[in-house]
Image 1 (cartoon, rainbow, N blue to C red):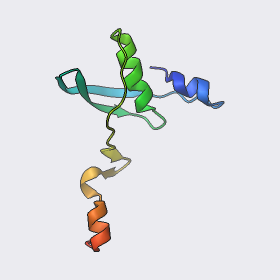
Image 2: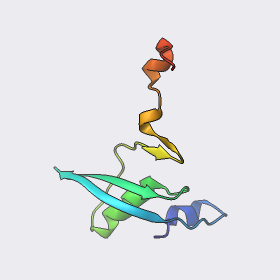
Image 3: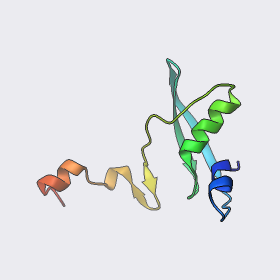
Image 4: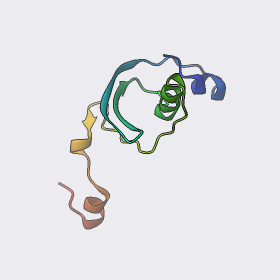
Length: 88
């Protein structure tokens, strides 16, 4: 997979790898995916490219980073915890 946004918007081309795309839900024209990829991947561009390949238009409505390196969403603090001082 080539990230065309990377090619046109950056002078430094970076090859990326999409390890896995898992369909979590498809309902009322909304597609919910879980994507495992290398750093530098533009997920918004991936969403647009998927829509184009299906012969339609699309955009990213929501993006959640569930893991980066060894850190997962489960080991993160919420904004509320930070505000309330609930740091352990």
